[in-house]
Length: 242
Image 1: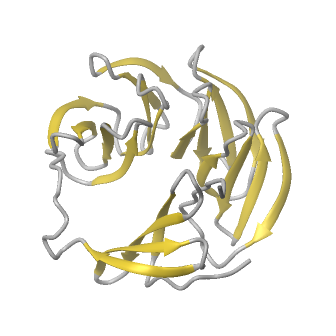
Image 2: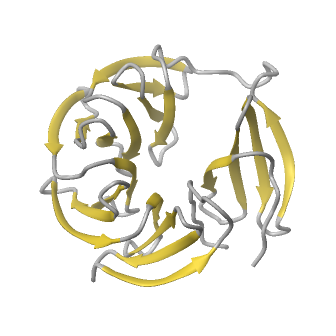
């Protein structure tokens, strides 16, 4: 439909549930970026740039190094970050703006997702290929899934029944069942990066390194089609316009 310039190195994106607003990280290159772009998806334009270095945005400490990705439960009260350098996951109380606790996980955690009910956090460790499931009630590791090579990004379905795991080096999207904590199938994809599962709990949108978006049926485990986008896409978000 349209390409919207937002700055150098847009890397991750989140879309509001009503499909009207998106927020994109301006990751930068050299030097690193420190801004967020706010997009009006009705007018398809940037309406605000937020400078994270200005001090106007109140930070929440993670008490860890390399806090790269963040997952927020549907209530908006709690969040979890994958801490790449410290091999841990930090739990944050967003209402009180405070660090709660950290859970150790295997090396180089990055991709992270939380089930909508907030009961489980799933995190992928790039160095080992493990996907760790944390039970949030006690902050303890409850399950570990193995078999992926590079679980770069994760996405939970809105109904909380499935988690999609991007296996970047295995060139596939793996689908896991939340109830059994096991992989149930996979779809071969070339250079998968970001993933999000749509409101129908069946359609996954996956960015591909060569410059396209894959639309995947995670129930039939089939690729429906691809849509060309600009070079080297990474983060992806979805919302239903209401």
